[in-house]
Length: 338
Image 1 (cartoon, one colour):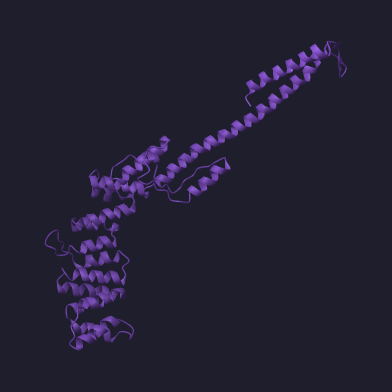
Image 2 (cartoon, helix red, strand yellow):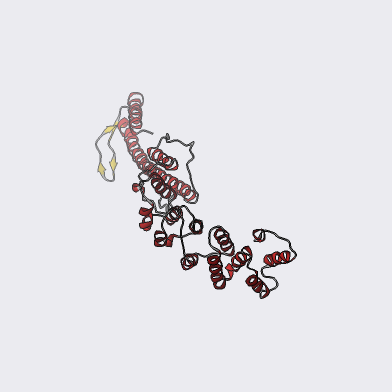
């Protein structure tokens, strides 16, 4: 209830009560003794009005007190609403550590849910909401998705943030930053972006530059490098020691070595191939299949037979099957057995 309206109504009521008593009941006066204090003589109508005035004052104090509490509670909700908007913005930007404290239970509950889900604004969600902060971040996220470069400094996002990575990727594709800028200052960029750029970089870079940044080597980049060995255009001449060093910098599995053998079978001279896979086969049992594949592919059967004869009965069954078929004059492509 509005205090002003309540005051007007109360005073009208008090005046009407006093007037009614004075006009229709009694016009006598009386002097009251209050705790030994003789109060002045007033009409009975006035004395009846005094408790009403005191009741009015008490009710105004009561209303004001709870109105103040209501305003404080409403203020908490308004502040929490602004914090929740910030929490939504952080969720749209994909922030990992979203630290917002709420004073109201409902917003705290909603925030706890929001902090444990991934929120990605769809293209259909345009920047025409009633909140300027949300409009701004939706527009920003959509711009980055569409390949544009935006300023993200004010949002204090981590290097590993997907929006940051895509924004830096956009800069790279537009030529605003070069591969050397990223690889030479890899501490300023997300590791995944550096590895992605390096995998693209090795397609044309010199061997010296490839080795310079080989800390960013991945399997994808390695296969790109191998595809350039002895190629006419943008080709590389790489000795076995360098190749082995590249292999050792990665955790390669049997399937990876087989793929390496398949790639190098198209471009590397036989002598170098045999020596390479002999070395890595002896050093790493996971590479022995690739050595056998190379030997059978080059029709060098004696070393292959020796390896198979000295192996366990359940080892290299595919190559043993291939050898058995070959001994029966059945010719198949060795790649069918790997």
